[in-house]
Amino acid sequence: MKHLLVIEDNKSIASVIEHLGTSAGYEVTVAYSFAEVKNILAKKQDFFIATVDYSLPDAYEGEVIPYVLDHTIPSVIMTGRMDNKIRHKLLKLPIIDYITKENSQAYRYLLKVLHGQLTNHKTKVLVVDDSLSSRQHICRLLKRRNFTVYDEPDGTKALQVLEKNPSIKVLITDQEMPGMSGVELVQTIRKTHPDRDLIIIGCSGVNDHFQSARFIKSGANDFLKKPFCMEEFYCRIVKSIEELQYIEKIKATADSDYLTPLANRRAFIEKMDNDFPDIIQNELAYIFAVLHINNFKEINDNYGQGGGDLVLVELANLLSKHFTSQPLARLGGGKFACLASGLEVEEIAACLTEFQDIVSQHNLSFKEKKITFTISLGGTVVAQQTSAKQWVEQADQALQQAHNKAGAQMVINGLAELSKKKEQLSLA
Image (cartoon, rainbow, N blue to C red):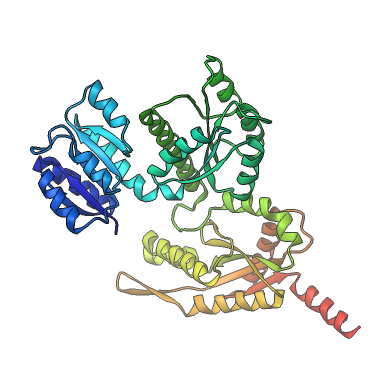
């Protein structure tokens, strides 16, 4: 657990900040005066972050701030006093941010900052600028907020870094660079990286009113005019990342089954279509299987929707445990899908049979009752199909054949033919 030092002479405000820190996941220590800060830091210095009140009874002009910074503790300054003199003084300091204690919105913003310091390392940022001093300055600002930072001096090298690190989420590029300008870099990147996947922020020191429009029309999300202040820089970066995270959350919701932790039908088929060329050329063997809960309507009738939903969630969990790292989905109703892989199709078929047995032996409690259920399974050996849609159609046909046999049955199209072909080859 990371440690937060709260320095605040107002006990009510200190209590609010302590609560925010605890809710964000910090272990909190509170100091109400400069003297208490000195006593605390004499014994303990491993604070991950501090919130520092600008004016304390024994340090009215912010004397506590450089003292805390000298102990290499990243700090957020909280102040009820603000004028141009204080603002310029704070912006010159290597602080995370400053927040004026005006209203409740200030504490919502503080919570974002505290949470961000814990999670920003997951966000990778690439800085592209041929000026070493400018590049280092931007990198310092980003590292102060705990972002994972890459930097390159030109567009060509930036493209190479992006190719090697597809998880980079933010790119900040200068316009005036040798070989490839910032606008040209943006245009090249947008051919393969849509704005829902990568934030691009352009910047330039040239006094040209059209520069921002050129960047944004070329695909950039935002623009910064050099020199920019720390405050503006953080506001634009954080806002852009929040928008990207919001888009990612919407996409995840749209791609997920509303009840189980699995993908829904649309997202699953879309992924299978995208991965189709690699799957066909892969040396592994694959069986695309569709599984269906037998007598699912009767389960709903006997136990209600709550019992039916519990069975669906339980089957999804069993699938995830048995077919780890395999693509899974709920296709709708009591029907699920799995693209199972292995070295040999016979091995995969045995694994599917084993899973049928696991399900049939499993039971779950619901309102002091025991629910048991079985599954039928239809599958197709992945070989010469031309699309993922064909997999589903062939597996559905096999599932219907399994249902026609009654009970917990399994039919896999192409398995017998493939086994016969292997036997003939071994005899030859």
